[in-house]
Amino acid sequence: MLMFKTIIKEIIEWILLIFGFLYWIVFGFSISLVSRVLYVILPPKKGILWGQYLLQKMFVVFIGYLKITHLLQLEDKQLSILAKQKGAAIIAPNHTALWDAIFIAHRIPDILCIMKGSILKNPILGGGARLAGYIPNNSTSQMLKLAISRLQAQDRLLIFPEGTRTKTEAQWLNPLKGGTALLAKHSGAPVIPIFIRSNTRFFEKGWPLYKKPKFPLKISIHVAEPVWIEKNESSQAFTQRLEQLYLKELSSPHRLQRIPYE
Image (cartoon, helix red, strand yellow):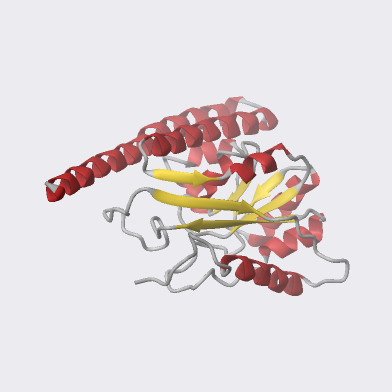
């Protein structure tokens, strides 16, 4: 009887997971198609608002689905508090999994993401990302120029200081890249570290889509106090200071503390 219940549970979870993937394909492609049309006919400022609105609603429904089906337990109330704050800010989470940006953006609808340029060509996310004004990182100099201008316009940017998802063999996180420090130095905006913890490595770098994780997925998101670059502090020194802050927090005892890869 116990084995039968286990098999049924596995089948149900697979079905729910497949529906989640189908949701992304159908709604992502639809929103991307609509966004490509709006990108042509709307003025840039209005287009960004519409793009952010469409993407955020898609993210909200997706995460709501995961919660209702008990596939996900998410602690992210601190993001709601952050969403109410105004002014330029560099929002900088550690990058545990492919969908980290979704967790942030579904709570902070007006955020601008810095992302891989290849995503703009993605048929599922590309149209919406372009309409929402997301900034590609193909060219570092161009990315910095656009991002700094947005920060000076009092926008909030989402950037992953690691540059990519945390590698499988990394204990806590990858060494931080210098882009976050350069943005802070040239814009004067604060960096707001965000610490993402999870009981799973689902969607980490190299995770195969055919591999089902153990449900429910448990994810905790903690928002730290803002950090400013000091007047005479170099970008390298600030990057090192940020990295030590992340390491101290992520290595501290927590029920969802990252465990060594098995």
